[in-house]
Image (tube, rainbow, N blue to C red; front, side):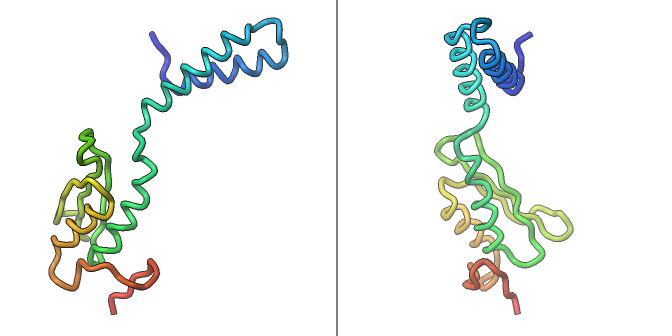
Length: 130
């Protein structure tokens, strides 16, 4: 059974420690190859847009009415990599959409709400619904 990417990375790190403590036990080429394969496997399991989920959540939070909660995800479609579902206080889905960019998806979601409730707030990231 092949180890998971995380288990593979842990094994490669253990080889590095063993090589540093006993340089003649582990060949440097073996250590480099194991490390390179572990890095490749870890990068393959993490989509490049994962770092964008936080900013996407913040952008959606800024355009949704108070009491609604955005849920964000990545899709498998490279043309529209971002997805969002907006739920109300009861947990019912009130909007869902996929988009190509963070700003585009936020604008699409904003149009799902009545005028004046889906527009971004200009309060430096803080909400002021009063």
